[in-house]
Length: 339
Image 1 (cartoon, rainbow, N blue to C red):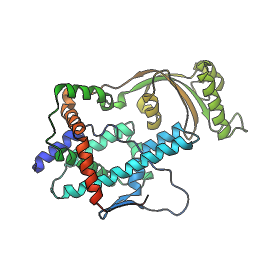
Image 2 (cartoon, rainbow, N blue to C red):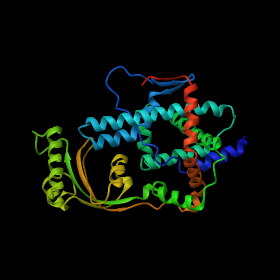
Image 3 (cartoon, helix red, strand yellow):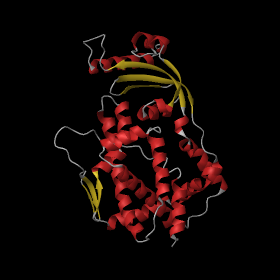
Image 4 (cartoon, rainbow, N blue to C red):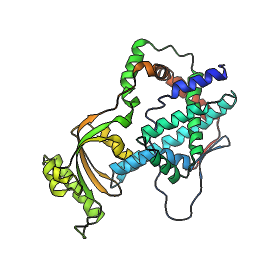
């Protein structure tokens, strides 16, 4: 069994970049009526997963799905349901692993947790701490509660690494291959810059009192259809867009990622240059957008993230072992899903 010091070093190595594809996940907005302060989503061996925890972890993906699917529909519901199920299972597995961790009596240094929280704010909220704290408030989570969630996630990753520390050592070509595959997700996204064409259709149009959100969405969908059929973006933007860039054909150049909402940024930077996106929806209205140029922030050099990349390779090599191990723990655990 490793010493406490070694375990702490292991935690810091694994989580410098964390799970780059964390997630990104939230629950539907709260309904009007009696407020449930914090219900239980699941019970595991006497431990609980709260609805607030699930809600916060689902927040970014819910916002992104809401933007992508203005009319909701079956695809929205399927993706949201899948994301929620994955989040609940992840939180259940965390509690199972925490039972194992208690037996070690190990600990994680607060500064390592702080660094991981900063990384998640950067990756999931474009580095916007105000937006991050607003989402904490909406989910009725305290900062201390979120730090505890982060601590538990770090424990799970470190315990997994320790459980399978006898994995074959990563080979040089495996390390380079893994780095090439994930370096884009490890970059400093706050340095991303994008140029794009945009058509904005407001949900309410002061110049057209008869306009409704439904009719405005229909207009945006009609414009999207015209663009897909080859219509000129600049001409349609000048004729229909209702923002400060309409006269210039909707062109905006050199826009930092941090100037965009996290959900719009995630959609726009993931799409190929030249691909029409939308209509996207937010509280103000509907947006059609097409990137013309994307400049991504620089990834860290391999020398700075080598240990983390090596750990990712080890996890891949032991993934089937881990799944068998955690499944055996699930079978012995007392689990009740209530959400």
